[in-house]
Length: 149
Image (cartoon, rainbow, N blue to C red):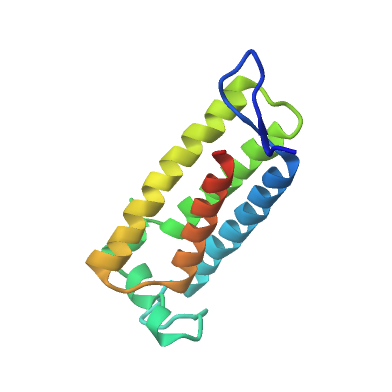
């Protein structure tokens, strides 16, 4: 059985329930990792929740100028993003309208662009990979890959 089918009225593919379920699991993983970044954020130079691997310590990345947007930690923005697209995907399990599929597609497109940008900043500007950030972006990119047939 194919994981994607197309209807005569729409050029957008519909996603199988198994793939939707996997996407929702990745959404939960991304949300939990985004929350973990809030606990891993340095407070007076000390991290409360580390990953145990010094090379992937989050202190430098989350304490940098790129760790917040307009004073809001990226973990809050990321968590909000994961909740938003998870709700869109979950709503699509009942109603597979063209508008819902476009909303998820555009949400993922924006999220993928942000993940790739933030990964580039982690790797080339800050030069300090953060374990929880990497998990967050892996969940996002994995779910986006499942969305496209």
